[in-house]
Length: 294
Image (cartoon, rainbow, N blue to C red):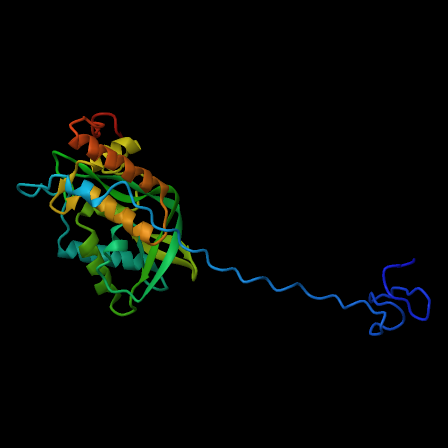
């Protein structure tokens, strides 16, 4: 078979041998270049973090919410005493299994961890998403003006941070976490270990407040109703809107985009503006007026 595109040796058309070289030798003037291996890939540069967006819900909006006044509200459950908190800490440690002690941060632990840690990773948790789904009548709310606490609800995905705790004194460190995050015996079903993935591979991390399948304080409200509650609720620890504002601002600073929270904060800002403009916003609906409680 003629191959007219290459050089000829001694005036004769060359022939391809089994090695793809022209003529008898593979290294002569008529040889085809040896087949090269795959070209090295161009290094992929890390994608720059998106520039933080200014949220619609501002500090000025938060400042318009009347602070809680008067006596503290009654407890929202059965308070845990020292023995009860220690029992919860030991149960959680027993569930951890082998491996490092990681804590998942998806809300306030991002902007106020308040505990010692030796490593921070950006991680994704699949099967769980942020949601204001926990009925709240104290802390950042009152029985007269109930609010909502953010938790992880089933479905979707959540990007946050994971903190690795030091290896020493795991029981003491867990107990301090329980003291900070858990107030009542009824909170125990909301605590679980979740699987997270990041640059260092999969890890198991402790997540405070993952919605159980069913619980008396678990609410599934339309996002507009969530906004109405959050725009009005305040308690001895501050307002629900303040919590939402802090979370959104810090997620934006980290380049973490949560479409649900971004829509919610815009609705809360509009509710506050309507309330203070003398126009009636969306009335809050509690469990007795159309809310879905599961």
